[in-house]
Length: 316
Image (tube, rainbow, N blue to C red; front, side):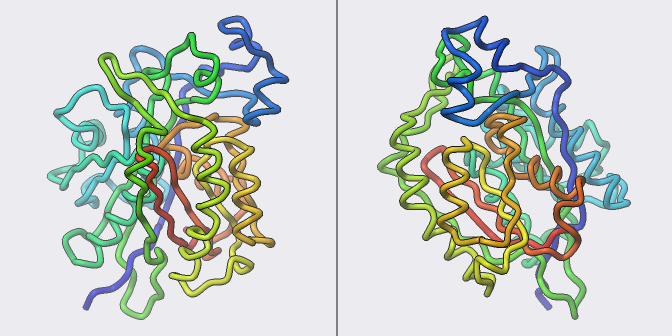
């Protein structure tokens, strides 16, 4: 029997150092008013030089595991979505496994930049459905501070560091699937609109192209992700979009038609944390009690490659 899977716990982690808009105004020619009016961000968290991305990932994963009441030995698959790992090998997932003491998991990294977590969640769901995994840790973690040009005022004001994680387990035979079918795809010919390229790698983007794509093309795709789960947008309890920019999130959420949903706005506190943004925002909504167990939540990631992936999940 091939049963569906569900998220049984979430967790998140952000480094201690807060970088405010006032701090940035002392580094580049910008202001709090300029940043808030254009992207809606007030603060972001920045990891130290001795805090690599796998450490951020491990902290979030440990919190999700503890919340699920599981031990590291219960996990047989770790999928980490990241585009900011400096080393090729060991990959981030293997380092998370080593930090947590997970014995012998399948350990894979997945790089779909800002859409990474929703791709990773789908991958774990598929693995559980195919019976090649029973319990998975799915983590989105990025250290954008390491790949941003701190002299470029158009991009350095956007980014933050952090990680979010979910535990994915098989459903009982009589249980409805808690992770809906994924709707995913990309626009390869527009892939250069978001880049992390070069040596050392540097983040750059064509902000206007991304904004236009996100606000005009993505609403219909996000609505189709709801349809795949058999839900109308009005049925959603929450919408957690990639936390790119408040001026993208608010129009996109409105155009999906999720009129009764809480809309995650963690970008205001955390900035754009790439693959970490969706699980970070989801974990905070659950922690604050803004969503409760069983609530249908649309997760929708989009960005680098001009990739997108979305699915409706049930809140743990």
